Image 1: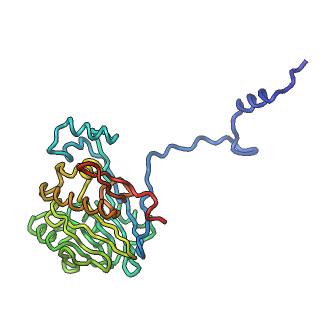
Image 2: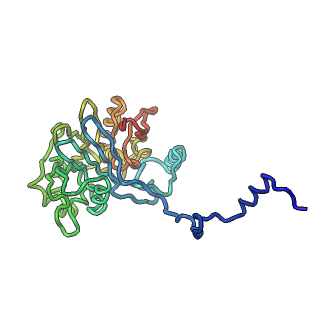
Image 3: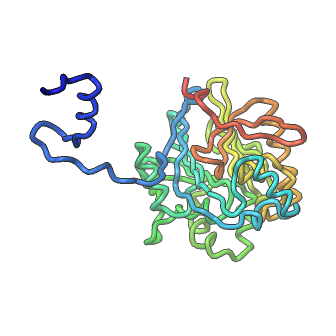
Length: 307
């Protein structure tokens, strides 16, 4: 005599059968593993402006204590890193140019390591290189001017004019730097040289943040009663330099002046609750500064600028 079917036996039998893709279709293989990934842009609004951060590239660097916290012992560096839940044997660097559509101009801040990476991110965000009206260079390190020229030696942004700090330009013009001479110097006649307090464009004002380089500047965007700071490289890591502004950073050319500028801008951002974009902050590189004891903490933007 056959046993009556029960709900349990039916479910067990069904679980043992292979899953078909559809009636009469062969079985499908599992979806392929794709690896870690990030969307190449993030766009928010600021008053009448649209602000888009671009992921122009990223890389992993070993032994970050050779870059950050040069003036602290290994034990302190390890303790701070462990408390922040980040490793001490490697770090991830992000390279984040920013596009600002003012409604009258499309303004690009910095150009990444190379033209290819920046243009690819720009295209993903819905823009073409020839739509860029103005390129603002915060400072002359290679990961900021690298995309100014194509591999063929032509300007990447064919219809653009340029703006940068006069003090920054003059300092690099005397250094004999190969990257500057190839990428930036040929654009000198098309470049507006700025002093702190001057506007690169309406609603975009330069401010001194010297130290990382001789004339490194941040830029404040103002639109519709709202503000945002393009901070560039005033703080190169959200823990090791932002949370610990007195820690020395390898890439800061004047380390004492850089720490002074870092604290001044962090104080301002925290007091005013102004959002900022940091070129090397974790992508999408947009966040806020909170006070934390004698230092600061980085708070990533969630949805505040998307409402």
